[in-house]
Every structure is written in structure tokens, then in C-alpha cells.
Picture 1 (cartoon, rainbow, N blue to C red):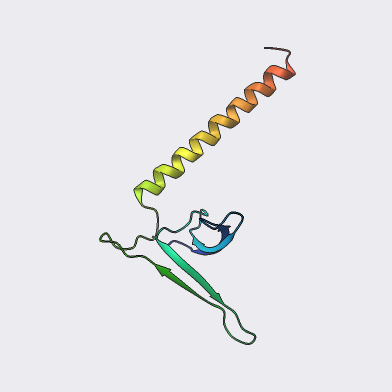
Picture 2: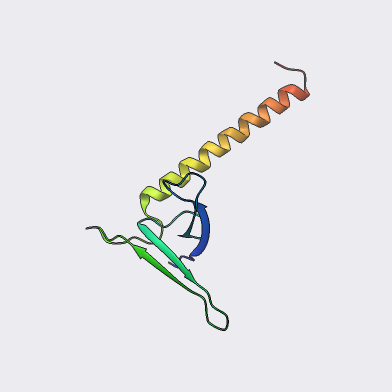
Length: 98
């Protein structure tokens, strides 16, 4: 399995209105266990990124652990239900129903 990783700006934890540079997967989900992410750019050099991660007894997981899959599936189901409810409200309004 291949997972593409991207740099993304996200809200910083513990800093109201602050931003953080983080690694995310191809679905935009933040890769867990990140401590810091440093981007180095200089004229005439190749840009590099250094990511510091915590390592637990279960190691470092990059990809789609079951817990992340279920979280994403639940998020998608909730969005689908909200969209169906919105469509039902729109249908009722456009047909004069209550």
C-alpha cells in the first residue's frame, strides 16, 4: 500500500488562532504522533522537511489504522445524513409541505 503524504496548515493545539505545519495523508487527515514539523527552504537549495514524532510501545503508525478508518467512515455517514436532511427540508419548502 502506498500512502501519499502532504504538508498542510492546520490549527495549532493550545494556541487560539495559531497555525501549525503538519503532515497529512492523502485524505487530509493529520498523521498521528507528530511533535514538530520543520520546513527548510533556501535559495538554490532543495526544500526539506523534518518531522519529529513520538514513538510508543506500539511504534509509529503511518497510514490508515482501523480507528482512523472508523472515524472517517462515521464522519462521512454524518455528512450524508445532514445532506439528506437538508434535501428533505428543501423539498418540503419547495412543495409547500410542513
